[in-house]
Image (cartoon, rainbow, N blue to C red):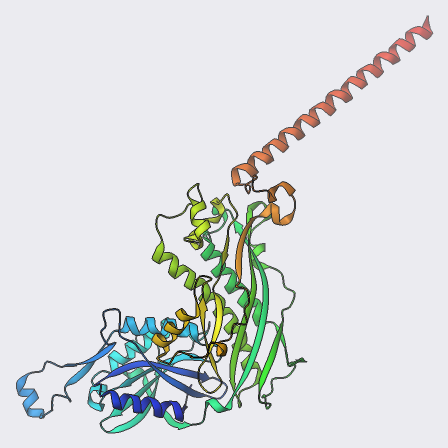
Length: 492
């Protein structure tokens, strides 16, 4: 349970000045920070306003509540006192989903903020709780997601900051809001930076449709990444060349290099299918550069958990980006037939291919991860396709993060020289059981081909057994005849 929240004073004061100068009656946005379970505290790094939607409309606005004139006159309330918030929850949630892709380990979308007067805030608690819930669903904190988010209210009449802890449940109500202590201080200066270059080479089986519900490339990859996340949790780590053996706080400043030591484990995903049911293999390989930021009071184990989580989140985000672009450009569904070759060549619709029907090998490059300077030595990230330039990156961060684009391109880090790639191959080619399978003239075996091969082998085996029996019978009869001939000869 988060009992106290500390906000970065420099950034929050800048946000307050920006809001007061805008003279907007209301504004909603995202709270970027970290919730620490070990410290029972929350940390706020920055506030990011939600941009206007595609129609140019603001994400939130004030509307006048319709009330009976007699009640209105008896209470003597002003127009401002009777107004309430209208928020585009779906748009705010989409903003949270895209911003969460840009945050590194130890940085999350931990809630929302609202800039509005006190009376309108009190009239809109249920609306705000629903917005918080939408953000929590769009940008989960972890696999075992926290049920807590922050709701920061910046009131301009009178001017003050308040913070509430919102317990996210299926039936969220205004009673889900609980006050918590809030103060401003130095947060970003105390963060320690951890970096890891993680090399991976994963292989996921392509099973027959009858033996598995995982059919498309996207589904197989998504399931495989989740399985690898479980293996990655058990990885030991070396920090700055020293094996981490105790859960102790990190006291040294500067950049810490992390190396993950993955244990030897059985491939549980491959064991789910027998050899006869596997018709192909997906090879997913490459390198992921990961960063994590740790508060000086948190243990080293938290930094390692953030690094591991960031690696998996990065792989999932790249897959989501490819799938999003696929749905935008998608024409007829590819079924692996003769029309699939054009789709494979262009890369479109590849994530939706039914791989157990595909007769051709295909490959797909994932976006590269690049890092942009953010606040006080920290970074955020974005993903670039092979055809995209840094200009696309600059436009993206200006729109989503409401920040100025970097003027010096040398400050943008591009440690991933080559993007991670996905390639599909027939099982027999990978296992090297059929050398001819590597030729483009020999497509991967399908279920019918396997069955036909097995039947032919059985037929040949039966013929071989029949021939052996006939041969043995012939020599037996010949031996009997020869023996009888010898007896007759001796008797005569």
